Length: 227
Image (tube, rainbow, N blue to C red; front, side, top):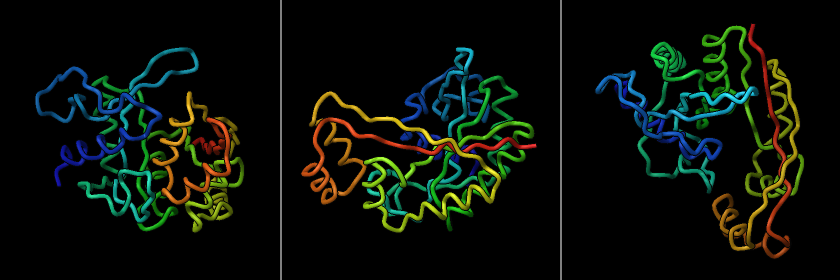
């Protein structure tokens, strides 16, 4: 598969991450048909601590996945076109876009290929080559805390939080625990989001036991500075 086709598939697949709704948005087309064109190819935006708005290349390493999470468009049973970058391809794409002044950074996520450990080794390899002296961040559900964490464990009983923590520690990453809350304007909106996240049976049980229009939620912010 050609690199441009991979980019189109994996930039489009990355737009479902709600952390950046502008992913896949149109931008000026400087080179018709060239790899430097950012039109529709996963450019999203973020704000720096000093208030600057910067552009990021937002892609998946792959949309192949061994898991079948109900809420995910890239789940194993989903009938979507699949593609996979090598770490070297991600590095080359990022540097090509950077040199053309289209982006100032990379937002990289991935489906799970072979195993979580193997997938993260591929992501870490990209970070190691691309940004010596830079800091990489990963946000992950913390299934050990919060009401939502309890629902997450019910939805994915094979998830092993201890093994996840051991993996990151072995790779030399540090963690900050972050507590937040999901809040919605109505019970109907709350229910609609739950039915995206979890199976219908689980949601029926949640709604029977949980009152209100929101829920406490916890994540782990993993980070590592590369020498």
